[in-house]
Image (tube, rainbow, N blue to C red; front, top):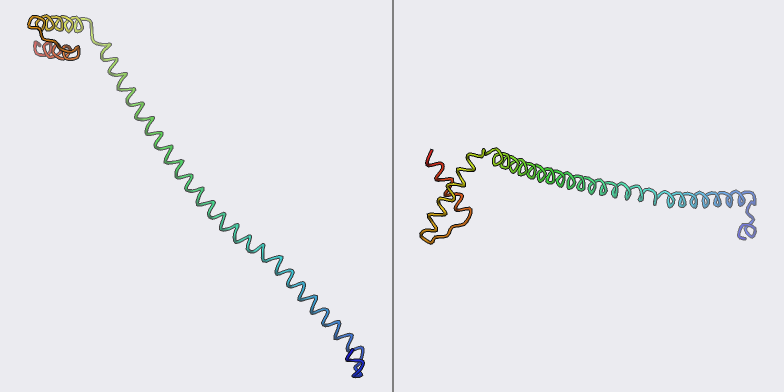
Length: 139
């Protein structure tokens, strides 16, 4: 409108309109590119952060797993030591020859008879301890 009433050169007006159209297109394209890339950049930053948090949780999980494994290995070692001690005790008792067992039985019977004469009562474990003491004292 104004150019015709003012007598402007139409070729200049077309150039000017074309220039404005290109600027608008460039501005629109730039805005679209910025909007398209902005979420990617944010996502990349967010992914890096969540990856770092994931790595931290992964490292903490690994520490907890290692701690559990060490504790479990310790429990197994203690159980094996107890089993070995029980086995050694069993073999010691098994290895005790018949003479020692006969002597201990005889001493236990003698002590039980003495206690029965006075009406005293003792537990089986107490009787075994007294018999062991008597046998060791007579050596």
